[in-house]
Length: 318
Image (cartoon, rainbow, N blue to C red):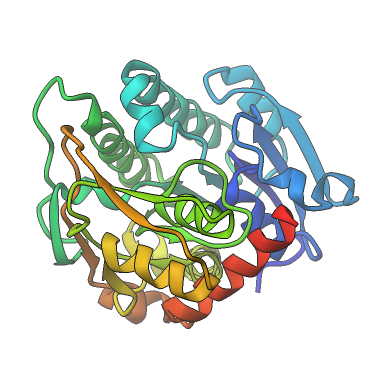
């Protein structure tokens, strides 16, 4: 258990960051650096908690990063441009925030010293369009040059190299995390689970890109947070990258939509629409390394996690 620490979470007002903060805040001081572009924290009482300090700012501003990190023993760097649609509309900003923002965080951590752990959030997209039981040692795949869809993956892969080499060269105790398809209550943005649940509860048509045969392994937010917490206190984590996900919760996008219609009791129709842009066709992690070094094991099965998520959205839409 992490306690008595001062922790900086960049992007901490987002879905994952605020969920992590909720688990840390009673026994630690948490500083959140966020521009509030995606604000999941507003659905909680975190802003009123005496152990939370919110600094509204940008990781592209190094002075702001340094001010936020002052006195922190742990840094969790999550700030990034997120969501496929947003990335495709803003490919340059996507890379700028990932590369320059991460460099700012690493440089500040290196220069101030005293950092016990720095967790850099990467993405499962570093494995490319086809990722079946991929391990951390498998070759990463980069998409076609100039294709905006892959700028997020390319820049996140670069930040992994930065973080782990700051450890090798300068001794910064860095860890990289590759989360696989997260969902749960309070998710903001335009992800498939969010889209399907909201539309199903409203009785609206669920839309799926192409034939819906794309395969994903879905991981409930509590299981993702468990994995992150393990990287914060286990010495074996330092200098490593970890897949964090739930390979048991693997379904096609079409089946996910059907499951959500069933679990919500909705009469919504499902419609397939053309999607002419590159997409990930298969994404399933091998989590053996996390099991071995972090004692990580996802606990929430897909139906259970979807039901929890549906009930939260139902309460918000009531």
